[in-house]
Image (tube, rainbow, N blue to C red; front, top):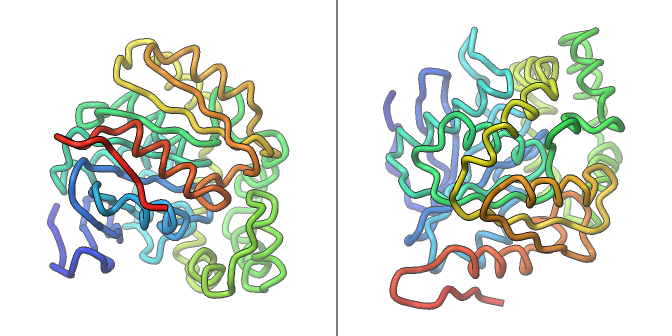
Length: 295
């Protein structure tokens, strides 16, 4: 495994893992936060959270092979949910990130749960926003995506790519998970890789087809032994991930706090970035000073 390139800290970088190339951004200095987005999302999701935190924290945002990535993975890579959790662990090891605060949203939150279950050595804290957990992986309303991937394979990816090439399709996808209306450039940053690249679609279909709630149920068995601090930040207006999931997570982690966020659907980093940044800043101490966040 090797590092590629030495761009400035606020520009895109690449790291080569055994599984392939992962592009990421690495901004700021201080305690390390690693942000994990979910299906059809990427580092774009975290832009307004990170802009408020990078003054006091090192913010690292990898684009995982979940549909928002721009470089397809190497052939034969394990793209099951535990395989993607291994990619996160290898990414942190290759960059030698230590005492990391993992921050996960949506499918990325499920991946974070699998990281702390199987690869927790570099993780010091965990932040989960609305995400898959327990039996809800995927939630029932989203199960056609995994079934479509299993039944039709790359043909399903092609059909989904046709939808997200269109602006109306992009807006529809984002509307169901976020109240905020974003500009066209942001939509392109989210959906462009999936719309353009058959290899990206192939990776995503392979991940979707491998989804099973047995992975999240297995990860949940480890929660009582995760004795590090956990912050759960849950949008109150989510259509997919119920508040009951948040309460179960709070109950099962020994040292967990739950914060409800009004005015947000599943994409809390999109709908309420200032609130999320403030809560993260209050949760992750900065050595020698009280953590703060710019408005």
